[in-house]
Amino acid sequence: MREIMNNLEQIISKLTLIQRLSSKILNMSVINRKRHRPTYLQVAPPIKPVKGKFTVTMLPGVATGPQMMEYIQEVYKAVNAPIIFERIDDMKATDKILASIRKNRVAIKGHIPEIPETASNITLRSNLNMYVYKVHIVSYPNVRSRIQNMDIIVFRQNIEGEYSLLEHTPKPGIVEGLKIISRKTTRKFAQWAYGVARREKRKKVSIVHKANIMKLTDGLFMETIEEIGRDYPEIKTEKVIIDDCSHKAVRVPHSFDVIITPNLYGNILISIFCGLIGGHGLISGQNFSDECGIFEVGLRHLAFEDEMYVNPVAIINAGANLLLFLKQDYLAKIIFKAVYLTLVEDKCHTPDLGGKATSSEVVERVICRLKELAARSQCAG
Image (cartoon, rainbow, N blue to C red; front, side, top):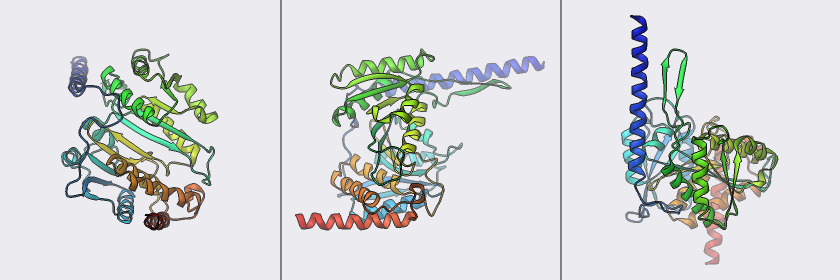
């Protein structure tokens, strides 16, 4: 009788997994019926302000997330950014959060823990079909780092691969997980990434994979990216196995220009590159679907540890990227410039960069620089 019950439990577990997989594939099919466009821009019409203001969903999250959101509001106030925040503090209000982002089509977020029954990062990405994660790795002069003159864009596929959330236990002591790669989603992802590479006049794209072992999943990913790459003859496309890529990332990082990679490899490579340029506190992360953009720090699980000394640069850069998404290019550029001057000329650094400044002191210095830049602009005008 016990053996029959164990077999029955295994059958039920497998049927549940098949049902989840079928539902996921069906959703991908529906999502990807839209016409593919070789562009980095959202497919939906541009977001338009209402009475001169854009409404942005704000998700403070936990730990120092709320503190970082306060800094963003201070910086936006300093540049008179036309932004109204729709703040949601309850991270368990998943439906409310998703409805807000779908309505506003743009959000900024703090740290949201990966625990059940919360609007975790994976929940947001999968429900909103945010298939692109973009991180621009740029080093700063006069900032303590292992490598200088870094300028690499990493595109990480955001909703498939090992992060498909299709795991189950067929029997005690055994766990199965499915790695999902679909041609349609990979095509859209590749077109988006190559579109950015062309717009920014990049010379080379490196497809990072493990197709020598995972011949079907990573094989499909690699082949599909290569196929799209042929539509961009001015950009050289190369294939790099993740093992070799990790080695080169440390030894010869300047050999990379643009990296396109599945979910898990991208997460690891971004951590490596951030470590080389000074740490996790400098770089922002950008999530995109065809309709929406969500902006955050590039390594959120590391950047929210110390309330007094957490580096605010990453979230300020995220706020500048959000303004670029809303076509507020001038405001974004002066924020990037103010951050640069704060780090490079003023050498106002938090302890993770070898300095002694607190979070608030860095923000105050950035705002001071913003006021100086605004005054110069008025004089020039």
